Image (cartoon, rainbow, N blue to C red):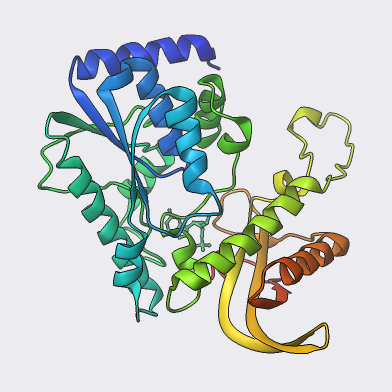
Length: 335
Ligand code: XMP
């Protein structure tokens, strides 16, 4: 049981002792772990920290702006934002294989990050939001003898970068990271967001990734998430149940929810015209550990509203389907 203010001051002292007056760079992804790491390190060493935020063009709607607002504007953290959309889209053109796509995204990430870091030659440390389960997971790699999906995350210390690793969250579990984030002043909504894969929308656009598809998907996804957040969740009152931990809305009642872009067209009608447009699938799951998952039994009214809004508001999409596959045998992501 730890006391948060004490934990923060200890962690801050440790970081200061470790890096002294050195400069530190950190790859900010917009995810919880790198965000909390950035906030903590900034608390410890202020302007000695520079964050590099690579926008691969596969982020959610307005995510880039949100990251800049939160860190650069509100917390005063030095953040270099790199818009690498064209570079990523260029390398992904014509590529349809899911593992190939992941590899390309991972490789380009390192490439862009390294190029930016090279502009900060005085940096001595590379900070990462590695958390305890990541440490365990990579220690166990190879034993299982197979990779279902190559999990790409920002970083992975490139050999040519002679930097030391700074990983202040290495001993923390996810729920502890979240509590720490809130205590450091990050918005609750951000810290308690659903997980988002490193390759982003790259694995939620089936087959070839195109900017046009990403733009359609971002808007559909944002509508889905907005409606999940706005729909109250009627928690069952069980004696002894921790009511503070009860989900207040369907976003909190699901572990992960998102839209998936299907590059197939189907026929529809709109007004007195015929449409021939793309399909999106909605995916919402409930899980403890993400190793197995159930599809969420979302209320039909909610699904109906999301479907109507997507089709009415996003020109280019005319059909919405709901994914009712469990994991296993399906995975949570579609690629
Ligand atoms: P699957 O699709 O394997 O996903 O059931 C399990 C969890 O892992 C996330 N995921 C990823 N996270 N890089 C990541 O950082 C990846 O390449 C990746 N692939 C899947 C997925 O979103 C889910 O939470």
